[in-house]
Length: 398
Image: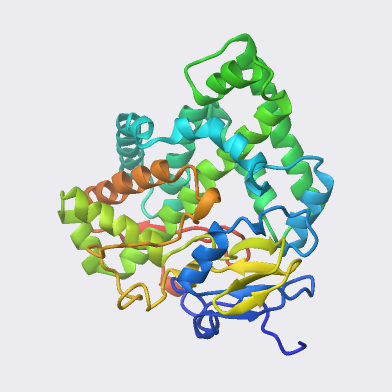
């Protein structure tokens, strides 16, 4: 198997999955950074089948699991703890049940006034500030950071600290020891916050978790800290990249931007956001699993111990599921994309991410009807080697 293609594969257009990935057969082996040869799954129905099947484990400590990078493997082996994101049921379900009530559509909808106000304030600061400006630093990063800080009860004044540390933790190209150190520092910061809220609780998710789970002995302080770190990182980094990548795509397609700017129809706005999620899947390294027993997927036998990469980005452009899959179609129904994953590990925070995107894009395009890139598109750098994909910076002008 010396001639296997390397994964991940290089992109041509930064807004599309790699052409080589699109040309791959539905199931075949690839070679990753450590020389191992997991199965790459590209067909939409097969990706959903893998993600919904408990015989495929999310536990990176199991033999054969295809680690994303040397950094992620080093952190896993040396951090001394695990996120519930990398656990299987019933362990995973135990932790998830403690949080699911915080992310219901009803509870997230209560955040609408805060998000509307935050969007308005940030756009006002953009209008009054320098022109051109980096959209990522001026808007895409602070908006989800403000919201997740409010939800968790984390002081936004500390945003530069946790943004810097989470960026170092996720940097697959950096020094593994630096990533581990950043993770420990962020854990200590959140642990101190947990102790402070034990003494003086507030009206926030972290305080409620402490009151309902920590005080009763159902969770340890370390477990609460681990859950909060995961939510803090996921709550700002993913939406930041989706905002930046989404705006880059809209500015390259003025007809789509115009439609989103001029409509007040929630159905059109929501449909546009779903299409951006489908077309611009930011988890571009695939969802990683390892088979715990022999399983047949799409007519291929995957044996126990085989690693699997479920490629959501190309599955979201499967022509057997999405007619004319490369076309942006806000009216597309149904839109069964897997941008948020599928099965028991489907993204817990997707109602929050959706609401932020639905409120941000129309408001941004209306406030700046002449918004455009301040550099040639070819000059934009993208986070191609990081697990969450998006522009490093997005200079815009108006």
